Length: 152
Image (cartoon, rainbow, N blue to C red; front, top):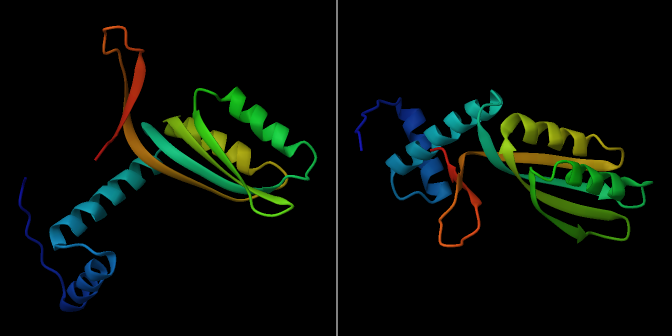
């Protein structure tokens, strides 16, 4: 590891130490590393670069005409992005769906926007984590599969 030394104004240092305690970090270095990772990852995601794994969560009214069918059809149309989906009945009218996605950042974002824009879908939120994706064939009769690991 490389060592960096930084200087902070006393008030900023006090606020940062309070943040560290609040979040449960055991030292400043790990907190700084996480902040740097977070910023670099957000910048990459904002530029639609690379690949990601993502969760898309949204609430919808299952009484809306054909909405569940349209959402399912969109997932099938983008089956290369959709890894899994979990459906929860919140009450008599509302459902929560969480879909796990993997693919190019721009494609995942477009798919999420398509789902959230459906009439009857509300509270949609996409959370993306940048990853490096590569295919692997371990040989010995094992199935070919995809690995995803965080970029930072």
